[in-house]
Image (cartoon, rainbow, N blue to C red; front, top):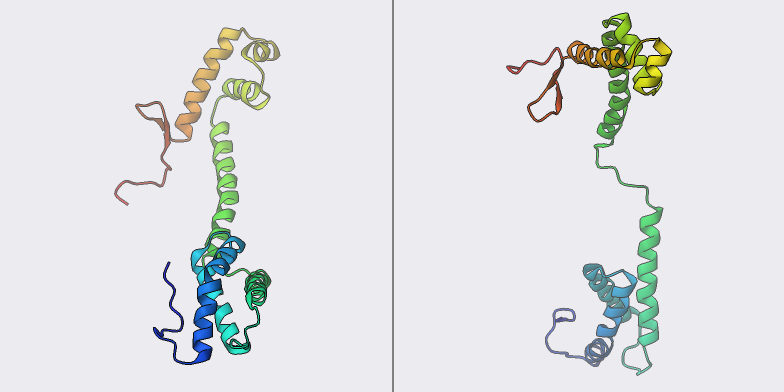
Length: 194
């Protein structure tokens, strides 16, 4: 990693030489420390180190020879903490598509309602015998044998009526079986030319 201090290649004043020496001694360790604080975000770590050194340049006596390492690490930590608090205090930014998410969520409720209305109408189009078998097996969750006992008919008749009831229901709902066994729904209003 290559660090350049304030765009100068040669230090002219004692203050600039002291900053260069401070940088050479502390920047690597300071960077590693900040990198750990930020969870590995290299770009933000570089920004924090740069801001820390800039504050040191502006406020500290670089020529006196006093140890600045504790001050540098404390300032870097404070910058990270302040940045975190600022981000947490700020309201969440909205990208302008929140209304679309809300619309799609409401559409789920609407789709469910429309599906239940369509299913109810398709269910009403079935014969009474087919409705009874579907009700006993799917709605109440009874087995074929239990449904046969409840309806007073043989289990074979329940299976036959159930098969024909499901076929009639698929027809009423405009559901088509594809060659791979999947069921594909084509709404009545759908037209391939549209």
